[in-house]
Image (cartoon, rainbow, N blue to C red):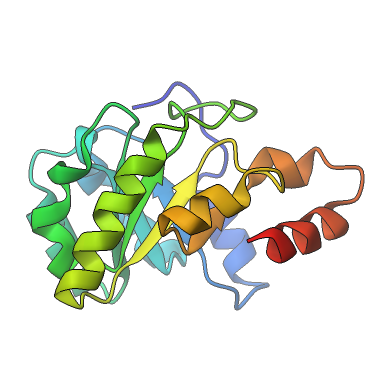
Length: 177
């Protein structure tokens, strides 16, 4: 689905032995159903796959949950929020990509926040127990925009890992959210 990989199965397996933290695995691959069981066995707690890369999302949610894991679906910037609304009752989380998937360091696409608002409204109106995660271009300067839109799980890779003081950056992001 994207041309690069950051953490594969061996890294997840190795880290799981040393950590009890939640492992939220984002499979940016085509036909993710081929790898779900392997990532679950490696130690993933939450498994996210792309709506655009899967033929039968409902079957994959069922498989993920059958493995005792939380199920999450991601949508790319060009995919409408309405694509995931029918699945909300079955999901633990929806990931709205706020940049084109694949490479860090991109700027947040402001229009993607409209999707977060649509999904948040549907979750709240129907009483679903579903988180909204955002990933891409999130920083201490724009985090309030994404939380105000309704996101409650934030991925901030570049902002943290390229920061001269990651701890302070995280603290600032928490204050600004």
